[in-house]
Length: 324
Image 1 (cartoon, rainbow, N blue to C red):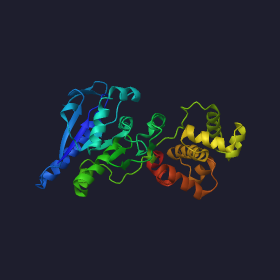
Image 2 (image 1 turned 45 degrees about the vertical axis):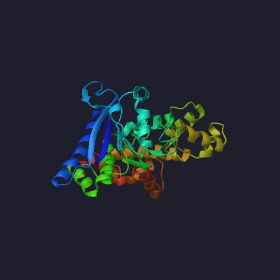
Image 3 (image 1 turned 90 degrees about the vertical axis):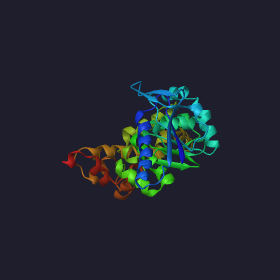
Image 4 (image 1 turned 180 degrees about the vertical axis):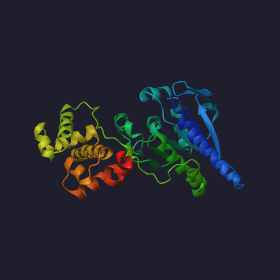
């Protein structure tokens, strides 16, 4: 039997506690219907045996951290509010997580739980995902972690992470398939109506650009791109405008924004295209020209690379006017 420890951090979000608990418990119910033994021994764990969630709206009774000497799987839920403060208030979990991992336990973070997981140092040099809204903050706080913000699930050396919000449940299904088999995972997918095939949170992302840095010439370059994306912009043109060599521009731009200059231009253009596709009735070519693309193939390829959907799929999914 697999011992599952869902840690109830200070500031945890209730849905990230009860959702996984319910699904793991349902696997045991599914196995009981087949007259098979349960596979998960599920525990909620807090520092002191009782935890308040969602700004004190809920109180959860738990085991205490000191009661759990050995576990097989640790689930770290998303945390609520100021993430720097949340890490500090939950720092007592960190040595326990490290100890359990080194003793053979696997560790999975859900959504913003990636911040606490990264604070353990176990993610150094590894891939990780989190909610796309917090991607820039995560990069600033943990530059030694390879953030893959478009992914729903990462799996590396017994450490797992998930994308944002309810996409966390896709990671729980992934773990159930690993531990209990495909049949149990498919059953839970149907019982809880979770799309089994999602692997990217790209369709849900809104690109705002990374401006939390102090490199003023790069901020000027970003603003120029955002104000002139409908025109053809060349990297050399931007370099000349802010009096930098192209090499220095590229290096500083990547460091400040986590994008190359060309990637940034593409993301700004595609974000504008997404907004056009979400409203109104312009056709794909009209939207393409409006955001500064002249090559249909290049536009469609870049759009799908960034969003995970073709322009037509995106419009059909998010344009309310065309839905009626």
